[in-house]
Image 1 (tube, rainbow, N blue to C red):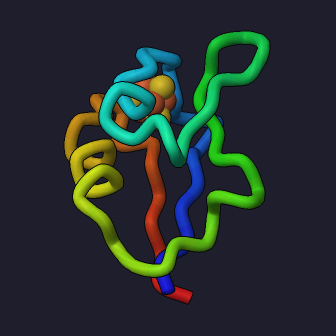
Image 2: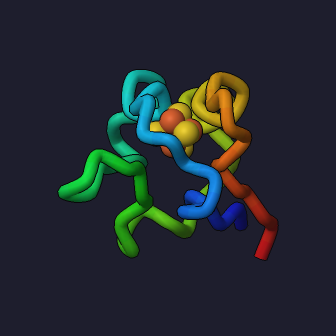
Length: 66
Ligand code: SF4
């Protein structure tokens, strides 16, 4: 199962990930993206997540298979 997170060292807060996958990503109080715990483990790779990864200018979204 894919596991998704945002690398806080790379995220610049464009929020493009939220445009493509609002069900997965959220913004913290400073405007940086993160994935809430309950959304980290995905059943499968979905198109919204694929688009978010492809459109993150900082390549900050990390998807790993568990
Ligand atoms: S698009 Fe990438 S860099 Fe921008 S907020 Fe989302 S994860 Fe962070």
